[in-house]
Image 1 (tube, rainbow, N blue to C red):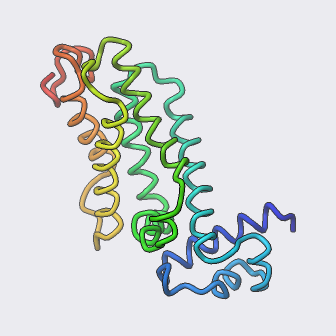
Image 2 (image 1 turned 90 degrees about the vertical axis):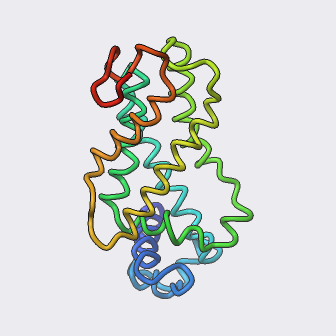
Length: 208
């Protein structure tokens, strides 16, 4: 087995172990067993359990960034891009529950991650939203007084809260696609200039 394949197998195993056992309760030996490798093999790729968690986050976020950029690539309207971004985020949370559990709950249990990690990958994710807002301003669709980087954090904050709710809820209570549209439109109602709603004129849902 090639090193790259083994590396990804270990990360995938860690995702499921962290989601099932919790970060603090998980043992490197459990990850090794799930990945079908020897305990010592883990340390050929990672320094410790925190390193595994951070590497998992980076790999998965890179994948998420690639996916959402692909979905946005052929969309020219920044208003539609906002809704598509929201939809991609919530769909990811719903379709990969183990990953959602790790990102929404377990990642925040790592003191090393919260205090020391230089989260350039997370900033790259936020910048996707900021770039959409900036594009909307350049096209004359969004208000020029908006600060794209602040808008990005406001939108992500809402998606993050909804994601945590989705992960911790005992049963599914809403359709993620409907919620993504609702979230996107709620922000667009504050972003767009008069007469430039998500539909280009008066929008039935937003009233713009």
